[in-house]
Length: 208
Image (cartoon, rainbow, N blue to C red; front, side):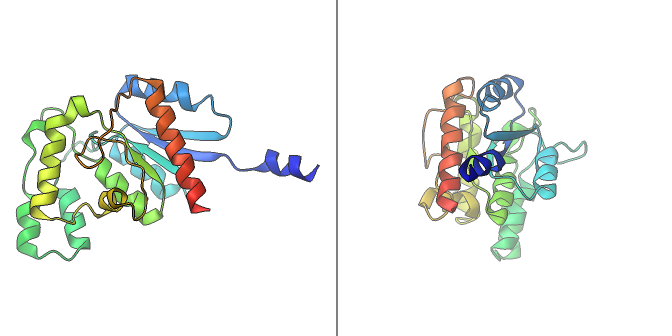
């Protein structure tokens, strides 16, 4: 009798999905919302996602895209905020901060998309929330390599949050095409979201 009551009262896993592509979100919903042990929240830009993360203390996992809009009307289409914020955290000297932060990614300017997924990962690391980064490699291959260049050439440890996951020190499951962990990702396929969900569940088990 006690076991049954505990099972009924067990808190559902609360998941945040961040993606601006309606097709991918539809597939994600088909997979995730049939899981009885999940509560799923959705965001389509950085402002929505960061608002959810700052208000909630119970997010158990994040599945996030890499390139998606900021959500602000007036903004520069650069990686300045991402690179400067991380550079300051690491105590990088001001000249290097300025040089790195002012490098544009011109291929993104027409799309109104920056790698805001990196900013979400920073929040995840600070709050110790397991995450999985899902980026459509065939769509963003050139942009991904540009981001990697910015990170590795100017501030080798700038991507401290994702580098931890690459090295296996902390959050170990990264699905993406950043040149470190390479797996085929097709977010139009249910199995991609199923794999990502399995990864989040494993990470939560490891935290216990």
